[in-house]
Image (cartoon, rainbow, N blue to C red; front, top):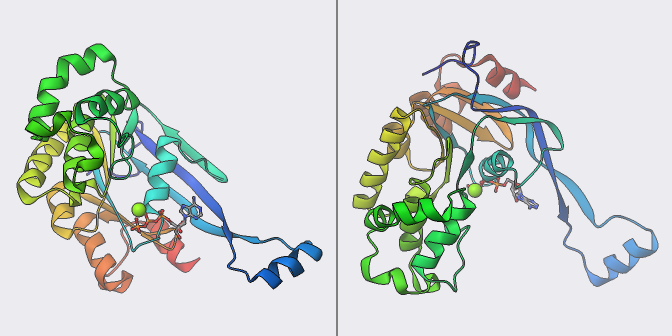
Length: 266
Ligand SMILES: Nc1ncnc2c1ncn2[C@@H]1O[C@H](COP(=O)(O)OP(=O)(O)OP(=O)(O)O)[C@@H](O)[C@H]1O
Ligand SMILES: [Mg+2]
C-alpha cells in the first residue's frame, strides 16, 4: 500500500478537511407550524454528515469505505463525483471519476437494457463509437442475454447491478466508485467482478468501494477507511479497519494514522 506521506506521486483523489452539512426538516404538528410561522422560527436544522474529512488515494489503490448506516459513505462518494459540494474544505480530483453510486443510478427504468447501456455509458464519459465498439463485451460481461430488449423496470436489483457494473468496467475512468453495487450480485457474478477489479488495479486504476461485506474487503482492498458519524476514525490496512468496525478503536493497539487518533479525540 502506498502511504499518505508519498510526496513524489500525486494523489488521484484527495479530500482535505471536508465538511458537509444537510438541512433537515423537523417533524411538526400543524399547531407547531403555525406557531413557528408567527414567531418566524426556522423549520430546519443543520445536520453535519461529514466533519473535517481528510484522506488521499493514489493510483492502483483499492480502498474500502466502511461504517454504519448513515455514517457518511455515500455522501463521500457524491462529493467525489461532484454531485455534492463541500461546505468547507477541498476536494481534488486528477483524472476521470465515476461509477455506480446507487444500484440503478444513471438508468432510465422505461428504457431497455440495450438503450440503458448507451445512456449509462455516455453518462460515464464514453462516446457513441466507444460504446459500439465495447457493446458485445459489455453484454457478455452482464450475462443478461434475452433480457437486453426488456425495459429495465422489469429487472431484478441483481440484474440492474450486473448491467451497471458491466458498463462501469468498460469505461476509461481513472477512479471507479462502487457504492454497494457488488453486494447485490450472486456469488458467481461477484467472483467475476472481483477478478475484473483486480485487473483494473493492475492497470493503475483507483477503486473506491463502499461495502458492508468483510470478505469482499479482504479480497479487494488493501486499505480501509472507517467512518463514524461523519468522521474518519481509522485509515489504514483493511484487516485492521475491519477490526475497528466490529469492535471499535480499542481493538487495535495504536491507530495507524495520527489523523484518526485526532478525529477520535476531537
Ligand atoms: N440530501 C440529503 N439531505 C439530508 N440529509 C442527508 C442527505 N443525504 C444524506 N443525508 C444524511 O447524511 C447522513 C449520511 O448519509 P449517507 O447516505 O452518506 O450514509 P451512508 O454511510 O451511505 O449510509 P448507508 O450505509 O445507509 O448507505 C445520514 O444521516 C443521511 O440521513
Ligand atoms: Mg450509502
